[in-house]
Image (cartoon, rainbow, N blue to C red; front, side):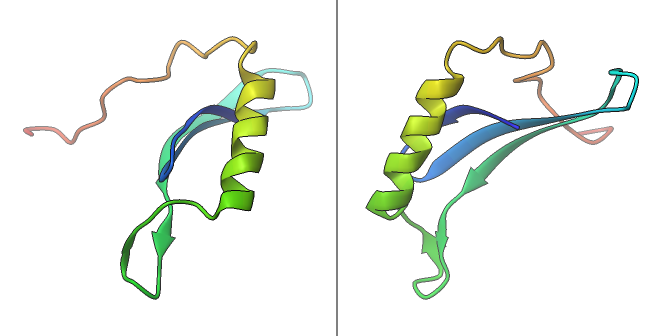
Length: 78
């Protein structure tokens, strides 16, 4: 997993899975939203979590961004 970006309410991550031979076999890119289930809406991360996410993002900042990141997804005909 690599943290690509984070702001007050969103977390942009990518996952890669490799087999025992070291071949890339699966990828996933996700934009996650922090939702306050009591309020029923997107809300800022709690301060402690936001701070830790920023630390992780900073640690991942020098990693190369995979070429597949940022491509648009859509269903046929849309």
